[in-house]
Image (cartoon, rainbow, N blue to C red; front, side):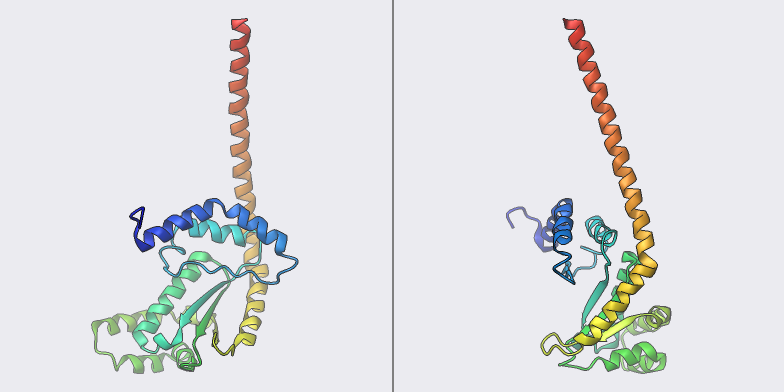
Length: 230
């Protein structure tokens, strides 16, 4: 409040500052990688703040260029029982998948409140989802009906796990899917991120060379001036 940024403004500013120091986080992870099997990074929930921001991209690419990285999209299953809300969540998930270009797992949390089988059925059976939509009368339902056709391909390869954070159920299945996602990263994503890392290193080395050349020129100029003055 002191800086008049507002909630999202404060998060964005903090994220930007965090991104400028992310090399320190990378060093910390490197030191701990032999002692820790997993590193969990909880990112800001607002999609525009992390997924679609420059800082979020910097952080994601830094991690993925050095470590097997997987995106886990946690959704509140109890708040997705309405087909329109469910579709909104799936569109979010789809956009995050295509923006991050990383192995992706949807975790449907709070299965202790409501089982996630209805959501899996909606993804696998178009007609069932349409039947649920027919109960909705708002104009948004027509838009949702059209969008559900577009997401068919997205659903076909999507890893989905139902869990209860309270009871701990579903976590065994989650770690199975996580292992598959790591294999997917090694097979399909690592080559691309290694290429990206090399490109970044080349750019950084070029920048360093140019800075050194400027420095030598400046030093040479100083020496000449000193000789002239002498």
